[in-house]
Length: 105
Image (cartoon, rainbow, N blue to C red; front, side):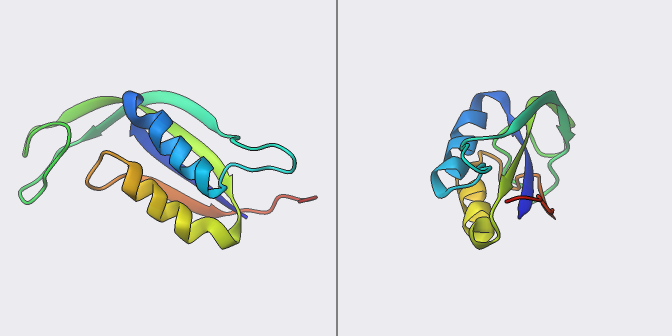
């Protein structure tokens, strides 16, 4: 089992979550579409060569974002990462993937 964590602008989060849910991520036992969402502020500065969907090159940007955490089965992780990247509005989405143990599943 893996845990996927990603950061996304508020207005795009449902679209990205749903893309992951559609491929089967976020399923724990007899429950589906499970995730934990935390609100925060992301910051980044696009550099030369970037094509940011938000902000301008060489200008520090602050964006209200959600941090979303959900589990994903081993056999779905590659498909989940592709779905995340395809549905996310950022050129370089920030995400993390961790291998975890969930006992009883």
